[in-house]
Image (cartoon, rainbow, N blue to C red; front, side):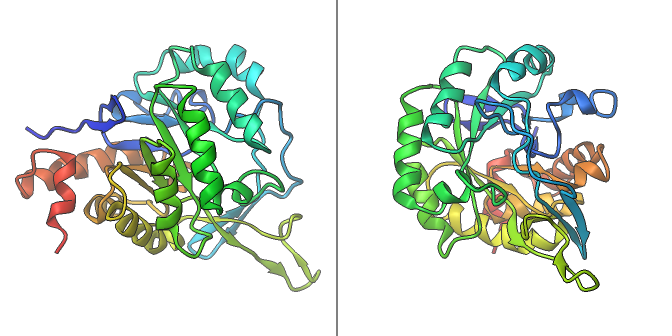
Length: 302
């Protein structure tokens, strides 16, 4: 039988399918649409110490083969997350991974320290790669020294799985991945959105008030696959692949490229049930190729 479990640090996901932060809210939004037993990990919407209103509207614009977003890490803040969101999250069978964001290193420490004792929190995804905020995000995630230092700071605060989410908007993503590993990360997520832009020729303005946004959707699949392929052959910790998955074959490609697990993002807005189809496709593919674990997928790539 196929072993679907995935080890991240000292804990295990029941299967390699995750839902990406920012595309799944805090879980309750999808309560009546999906079976949480078929999702290995729920990566929450970003949590910052204080509530954030986010960027001006419009915040989401469709593009050919994808979409641009400039949400700006809008969220309810730490205290409302605890009082309003954690009660539901504590009931889901999926591993709850809190996406942690902030304007500076202190914000990240505050969120992890405050939530460290919450039993419902399975682990952390440290967002060092959001392209839609003025402070934090890319400002931290493009500098290997800062990535290593912040990861090390957070490492001493928790023994739960620590996952660093990487940006593709750098010259060499493997350098950032190595810095996260050196700092004590248990895994890395590849990739966050790419910086993109659309212009309204009639008004001669960017369609997004902030000028640029984060490009996601099937357009970025090849970029995500290349990042996972390179990073998984550079670091010794698990790599979680995300970016452009809108059909089961895309998830299979990530596993073949070297991902230990995957996250589905933009596709959640189109087909909330895609996770079920992806998991079934993984099981069929494994049976066809006599695979016994998810880790064996990468061995098939020639």
